Amino acid sequence: METIEIDAELRSGAGKGVARRLRKTGKVPAVFYGPKRETTAIAVDAKEFSQKVSTLEGSHLIRFRSAAGEVSSKVALVKDTQFHPVTGAVLHADFYEVDMAAKLRVRVPLHFTGKAAGVATGGILQPVRREVEVECLPAAIPEFLDVDVSALEIHDAIHVSQLQAPEGVVVRYETDFALVTVLPPTVEEVKVEEVAAPEAAAEAAPAAEGAKPEPEKKGGAAA
Image (cartoon, rainbow, N blue to C red; front, side, top):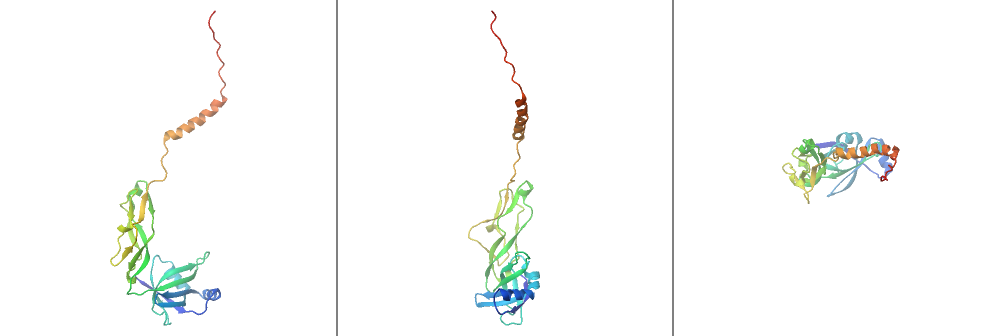
């Protein structure tokens, strides 16, 4: 996996006021933490973070370019990103330090490839999971995992146990859940007779309402 480099600097102070002033200068307030370090308050360039990191899919390694010894050349994963609900601007980011020599667990997105055979006969491809958890060394984190759906007929499914992962990457799961399936068509064809019967009844109703009863015929035995 390619490591993305971004600028980072230490920041002082806390609170909404400090965060607002940072954002006005084009910075994003962030924190850098890990299992063997205290949480460190940092700031990253908003434009650089948006262009290089926030739009990426999946997990990516981030290396800090910084003159500050505490975070300089450290490698991290983005654990959380907060966005403005209206403008979409990045408000805050959490970075988790990783040890390049130690395995870790991350979520990896799934890419469904091919056209399912069942779709050609009217079925609907239905992804059930969009990502899975894998365990591997940080440098081996895949950007995504391909799932070929070409052989799926209606009612068929691909389960997590069938997923192919690169060497050194182990897919972790407790139950063999489905990743994707092909559903049958949701709209059934309506039989012609089911349509014709109500229409015939509707046409007959007005005629029946306007009809006059036939006069009763008188009759009797001859004298």
